[in-house]
Length: 212
Length: 321
Image (cartoon, rainbow over all chains, first blue to last red; front, side, top):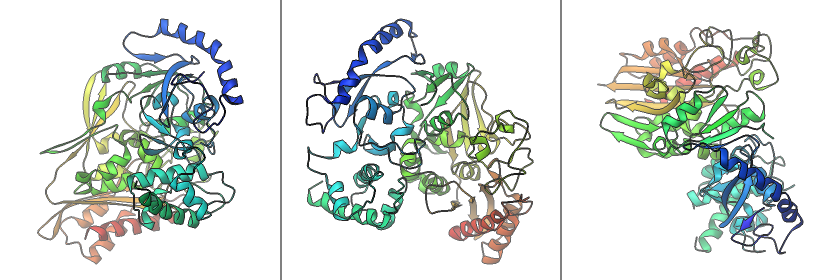
């Protein structure tokens, strides 16, 4: 199903060639492919239009890797990242733009993947938590979250980290007030907020030390 | 998962208008309110018409007469664009106070103005007036987040934080539609439920809000104050946008427009009268804040909003004085 620059796999951090999820995803591709051929014949000449239920070929750039895959218009970026690309760091929470668990960066700015149609992400750079690591090496924000014990159950943490990354790209040296505002789109049921704010401050220092 | 729909991404405004003129078509700007409504089945869409291909609606263009803000400008851009933070500060503050950082990065000014209300009966599984039913459930029900002003028969509050600032700033809204383009005053864009109970604005089938024009006015000062139940990411319980033209130490012209308390951005004309011709001293500010609550008709659960409103107007005026 996915074509990642010619090689197929389970997403950026996957140490194996083909994951179970990646395999399952690709098995469905044959039948879906027929739908696209049919749809192409009926597309209107001037307006790019995709009929309901018809899978449509999109090219998504996720963490610097190009994926060509088939999506339905109604599928959200959150769904496609998790269920089609097997990239499960991005979490489903409320799925209505209230909790922030699904936060990704689109062109470097934090957004909710649950309220973004996958077809709308075409032509933009998507960055997920998987894209903030270098292999098994955690990124600056992840390191800071561990150092400051900025989580309890951890379910909101991927979204918190990506939101913090977005904030720090826009404001490399935020004040506490800017951190509180910048992180206000992410809920933590465990209430680890004070530690999260501390971690974002620490991440700003770690990023500076790393020369970013 | 959301029910299936046809998806179209027109490349020109003309194509978008033609697609949206057909029954069952819905416009997608940032998509944040649309996807929420589709997921919760507040309404359905046979066709989603994405406006994301219309780059001409994403620009902010200054002119000697004012500022042309494309309807697809994101709330984050509106909040951070320097010329807006000058005389149009109320708009920048409204955009910055809306929603959450993620939603401001995605949601557009046009979408913020056209979003559907947050009334929990409208959003929930109730066949209320606004959804074509027979009853407003809020009137005899849970109405702590509902309106203080307005004629009924529906008691929503308009959810936008940019609408009241734009009415205060005397903005003009440009609309494209099947019959060509038209321009309406911001104040005339929003409709009360006694005129149209299922719509919040004057847009007809096929019409798209394309641009907000902010006229330049010498001596204009503005600000927006929003009160909500927590410090961030919430809708207004009460709010006030204030725009004053001050000349020779006195208020030459005043607009006080309330948010979170009426089905439309609500002009507090008694407050405007209390300010006009006066110096902005504490006694005048207190009198204007009191006047802003004139005519409020609280229901069983929302009388607390009257006090919040008085405070919001007073704080907004003090911020300007």
